[in-house]
Amino acid sequence: APSEAAFDTTIHRRKTRPVRVGDTTIGGGYPVVVQSMINEDTLDVEGSVAAIRRLHEIGCEIVRVTVPSMAHARALAQIKAQLAATYQPVPLVADVHHNGMKIALEVAKHVDKVRINPGLYVFEKPKPGRSEYTPDEFQEIGDKIRQTLEPLVLSLKQQDKAMRIGVNHGSLAERMLFTYGDTPEGMVESALEFIRICESLEFYNLVISLKASRVPVMLAAYRLMVQRMNELGMDYPLHLGVTEAGDGEYGRIKSTAGIGTLLAEGIGDTIRVSLTEAPEKEIPVCYSILQALGLRKTMVEYVACPSCGRTLFNLEDVLREVRQATSHLTGLDIAVMGCIVNGPGEMADADYGYVGKTPGYISLYRGREEIKRVPEDQGVVELINLIKADGRWIDP
Ligand code: SF4
Image (cartoon, protein in one colour):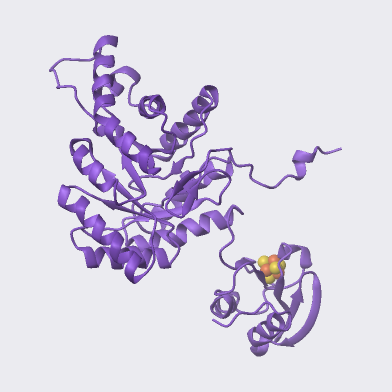
């Protein structure tokens, strides 16, 4: 007999510790969190508040900002206050660089999470012809990193805020490159070095990312990170992303290939799709990836056949009309099928079906049950009536 696993279609997510970021929680079995980043200069307080609000209103649950100077970091205090006064508090994360430890300490007062990039903590002076670091040199630099990082870690710990250790394949420190190569191992070791510093200070509100612009590199890095964390008994949640994914269709596909593959393996607690487009464009992609994998259901799931010679109406037009009329509903599955030749099973157990019956007529289904046959030009209206009759309609 087939094993139970043969029937198991759920994704078993890796067990991670919950890390709170404002009123949102990453990991700990909470839904995968969607995040993005504003492009505005944070010195432009009004513009930044508007951008954060725009993103939050369409479902961005954590918003990232960048703070290149002390003035930018201080502006975050105003941004936060204005959001609270004119809208609502939004979980914020700030990107900072090592040469701005004072900046990091300032911004840590105003945001819920600070993102640091280990590759930017560079203390080694380039020596021409150098091709390796001795263990002593390696350790010496590690000690300097610890001293630099410690005040920030202690500040975040004291405020019960979070930190993302965000490794980028493109910016690994030289000593990691020489010791481990330009490899997923170098990325993972880079993250582990920073995790160990945090753990030695008893700070565990950590989220880890290992982004790369090449999907196979990113996949290997996250998988190796999970393996190493399992060996070391660590349970930090992971932030997934493909950097520099580009724009348009390929940018979306590339991001989905990387993020979706890992999510399907149960890896990942928060995601960002990085597109060379307005950040608002990233949010629907995130939700579509999560919905396609059954991890979050935030919109109507449309099941539609590709159409063929048997199709009895213009499927593209009808699907568009059905979508226009129903896309504001959530939690429903609606099927639009050109014919019923393969039976209601083809509708993937949708809640409602709009199915070609005979020329000029369509049938409406509730689940697998045929409810009524109506002229095609009344199909969409009758579908809405059926959803209303079932009490599942919400006015747009
Ligand atoms: Fe063709 Fe019918 Fe299959 Fe659609 S459901 S692809 S119309 S056979």
